[in-house]
Image 1 (spheres, rainbow over the protein chains, first blue to last red):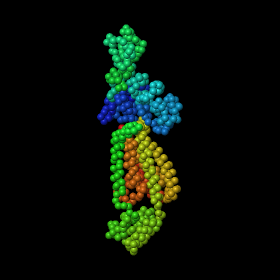
Image 2 (image 1 turned 180 degrees about the vertical axis):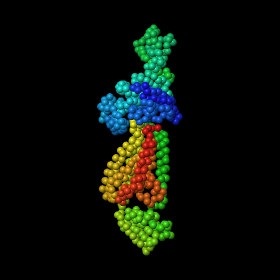
Image 3 (image 1 turned 60 degrees about the vertical axis):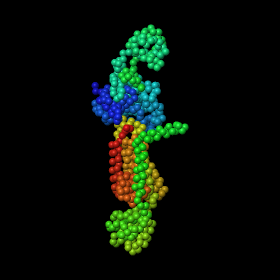
Image 4 (image 1 turned 30 degrees about the vertical axis):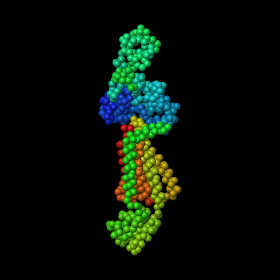
Length: 294
Length: 338
C-alpha cells in the first residue's frame, strides 16, 4: 500500500550547521507517526520541510506519490509549536477566518464541541489560557477536515491534566482514520499515541519502528527501583547491574520473580519497591548514552 | 530600582546593537538625510517673483535685456507661448516676458505680484514692451497646500500602516501559520491593500470634506475623478509599503526604510512648495515618486478643473508603479523569519 507521505534523503543545511542529515521514512495512512528526540535534534526542521513551510537543501517529500503542492496544502492541518493568531479576533472569528482559506471545511459546530471551545467562543484569542489556546490551535489545524495532521510539540507547557485531555482529542482524531504526525520530546506522549516512532538525534534517525517493538528489540529486562535507604544488600553480591542514582537505586533484572526472591533473601525491605518496564527514555539513553532531557 | 532599570536598559541596548540591520539603518539614515536635505536646499535663496521668458534662444542674461539682471526675480525659460500663458492664468508664474520681436509682456490682472513686476519692468524699459493681460483667480496657498497635506497623510498611513503590520505578523509567526494554508502571497498582499484602501479612503474623504468646507477651498474638477486619483495613489503607496515589508524581519529596520522613502517624498514631491523652479535633476527625481504623481493629478483636478483624460500621464505612471510594486512584493514575499 502506497504511504500517504514519503520522506526521502532529506537534508537541511544552515550556514555552519547541518540540521537534518539525510532523513528517510514513510508514513502509512491512518497511522500516528511520532518524531522524537531532544531539543535541537532536527525534529521541527524535518517536520517544517514536510509541511512545505521550509525548503529542503536536498531530498524530497512526496504526498500520495506527488511532490507537496497546492493539493497537499488543502489536505494538511498544521499545529505549530508556537503560533500567533490575529489579534482582536474572537475564538469563533479565528476559526471562521481559517475555515475560509480552504476549499473543504469541517463542520464548525462539531469541531467546537470536539475541542471543547463552547465556553470561550466569544472571547478574544489573546485572553484565553494555555490549554484553551492549544485546543483552539488544534481546532484551527482541523478546520479543513485534513487527511493528514501535523502536531509539533502540541502539549509543551500544558499541565498534566490538560495534556491527557489533549491526548484524548488526538485519539479521537486518529479514530476517524486521519494520519497524525507528532513531534514531541515527551516519550510518554509518543508511547501512548504513536503507532510508529522515529527517534532523531543530531539530525539523524537513530531508531525507527513501533514503540513496543523497539523496546522489545533493545531490552529484555525490567527495572526495579528502591529508595536508597531501603537497599541494604551488598551490590556486588547480586547477579545483575545495580545503579545508584541520587536517592534511589535502580536494578535491571531479566526475571522479576527471581530478583524479588533474591532481594528478600538479602534482607532488603520491599515495601516501597517499584517495578517498571523499560520505556522510550531508557531507549534513548541506551542508543545515545545521554539523558533525553540533558 | 536602579539595578533593575539598568538591567533592562542593558538588555535593550544589546538587542539594538546586535540587530545589525536596524543598527545599520539608524546610522545610515541620518547621513542620507543630511545629504538629501543639503541637496534639496542647496543653491541660491528662493526668488521673490517668478518670470517666464520667451527669449528665442538667447541667454537669460543682462546682455539680452537689462531687466533680466534685476535681483530677487527668478527668470526661467518658458516652454511654448500657449503653455506659458496657461501657467500665468493659473498663477504658476507671476509674469511672462516675450523678448522676441515685437517684445511683449503678459501679466495676470488678478495677481498682486504681477502688478509689482509690471511697475519694475516699465521702470527698467518704459517703451520697449507691448502689454497683454490674462485673468484667472488667485489660488491661495492653503488651496494649493490642502492636496499636499492630505496626500502626505495618506502616504504615511499607507506606508507605515501596511509595512509595520506585515513585519509584525511575520515576527509573531502569524504569517508562518498562514503559510500552512492554501493562501498565496499575492492573495494575502491584495487583501492587505484592499483593507487599507477602504480605511484610508473613508478617513481621507472625511478629512477632505471637512477641510474644504471649513477653508472654502475651490473644487474646479470632478469629485469622482479626484476620488479615483486618490484611490489609485493609495494603491501605489500601499504596494510600495508591501515591497519594503516583503522581506524585513524587524520593525526598526522597516521603520528606517519607510522613513527613507517617505522623507524624500515629503520634501520634493511638492507637498509644501512647488518644484517648478527647482533644479531639473530634482524635478526628474521627484517624478519618480508616487506622491508627486498623486499631487500633480489631484491639484490639476481641484485647481485647474482637469479631467481624468487630462491627467492620464500621471494615472499611467501610478498604474505602472502599482503593478511593479505589487509584483515585486509578491515575488519577494517571505512568510517566515530567517
